[in-house]
Length: 93
Image (cartoon, rainbow, N blue to C red; front, side, top):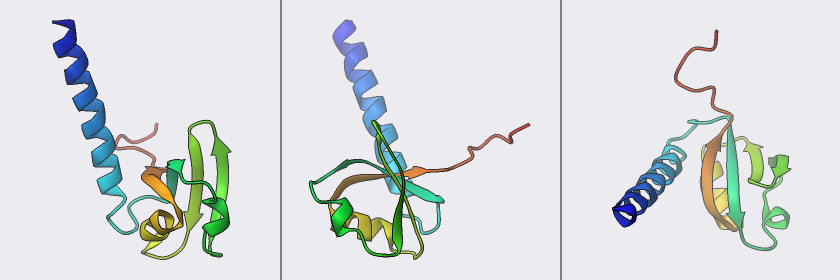
């Protein structure tokens, strides 16, 4: 029973990360990008128009102009690109 629950939870987390990564493929879907895992030399390989906003233990938050930001981050060495800076679905009151 515990094994099934752990397997289900692992699948749920994996599906959630996959959906977030797929959201980044839609142009202009998020104001910034979070790169939790990158190859060594990632920051040095970034294009000039991409800026690092914040570096935390969870990863690097970047912002840039252009519809191909996600592709440029993957070319620079990002292993996963997730959306950052979204306000959420519910209105903030």
